[in-house]
Image 1 (cartoon, rainbow, N blue to C red):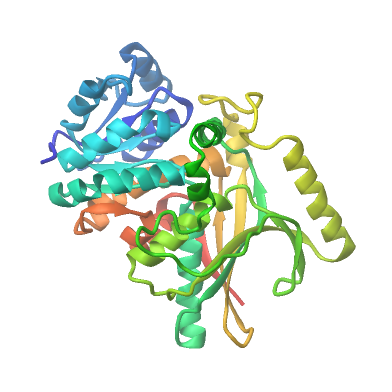
Image 2: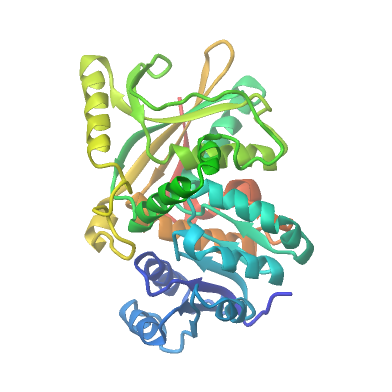
Length: 395
């Protein structure tokens, strides 16, 4: 049974993204007598430095915990109702924390974009979580909340326009300004290394239904090369986050008892424009990605590194989701964010996810969840009210 000493512990608060989460809570929930939170990490001195730098109250509790010391993780978990962790790659540093939260009945939120590890955790700990009351919520940042909820909103509009959800939705990135995090790059490198050591993992990486144990849906678009999207009237190019987002969308469908159908097809691409210029743009993007693929070498961004405050605040994203009926008619939803995706927006989303489950949807059943399947409309409202996201219908 969880402790009521703290509502939320931010684990990894001395790291770059963890500091942003702590800063968000300090800025928006200091003085909220109903939210008791603490900062956790490997060094109490570093935590104190971050606490002072972000303007958190001087009496903000600090907890020493280290991924290499499972006992310290259990001691941290024993003090709280929920844990937000930004300590990745999760396949290297997250397994003991998931186990500890599942065993203690404590809610867990992370930023994982590592579907094979997520499946391994589901297989290992879901029965325990269901027995203790723990809610384990993966992928509470840019991967994959805007995409999971974008599909949800498109299907809600499809119900209004067509009378029912449809079995085909396209996710399209129209604009994005900002960087992926050093943690994203490190996760990619860790995944490549794991697959190199164990070739059996390759099939799991490639499986769109790796996060739907016991269910295999229809063949999905590969979305791995530039293509003309006739429904959009534009050229498209592959989207680097699709390999995690599509898996989470299919898991959401399963967790909600298949409202999109068991024949649901979903893909994600980046729109690059119409005509010859659009085609040229698509090919140029692919060439750039191949030249410097995120996470493919040690030259990419490092964990703990990130953009300046001005760069974070000048970032944005504009995502289009198109539900396509059998007769070709469309219902469209748009999700936009007011900060860079990898840091500014992500830190707000994971914070509000934890508060939403705590305050707005306390009766969500125990087990392993995606944010949208667990919290749905209430999460959409909270993100719109507090986290700078907008959800709209496009005619």
